[in-house]
Image (cartoon, rainbow, N blue to C red; front, side, top):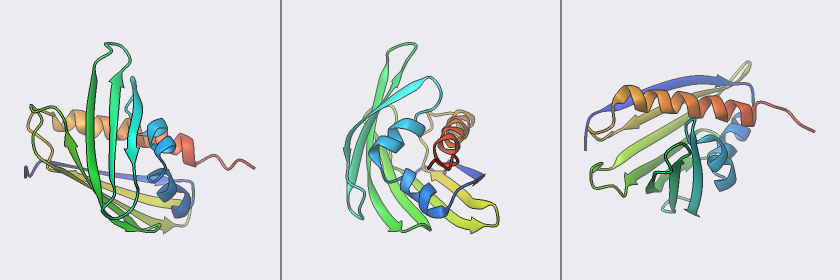
Length: 147
C-alpha cells in the first residue's frame, strides 16, 4: 500500500448523528461526495461492517466516468467510520483506506478525515482539493436545521 495520504479537518454545525448519517445513506453520499463538476451514480451500498459499496463519478463537462468500490471495515455509530476504496481503472492500482472521526464540540461536530494509500497517479493536492469540495457540499446538506 502506498504511504501517500491526505488529512482534512472541518467543523460542521450539526450533531454527530446527522453528520454520521450523511456517510451511510446512498442518496446522501451521491449528493455531497462527488467534487464540483461531477455527478454520482450509486450501484451498490450496504453500510454494515463487511458490507460493500460501488459507485461511479461522472465528469459533467467531458462525460468521462470512473468507477470504484470498497468495503466497510468499521462503523462505530456517531464516532468513526473506516472503509476501503479500489478504482476499476488499472492505472490507479492499490487499495485506499479512509477513516472519518466524528467528535461532538460546543458548536456541532468536529470531523477528521484521513485518506491513505492514494495511488501515485493522483496528485495529492487534487485529492485534497476534491475532499475540500466534498466537505463543503456535506456542510450544505447537514447544517440546515429544517422542520
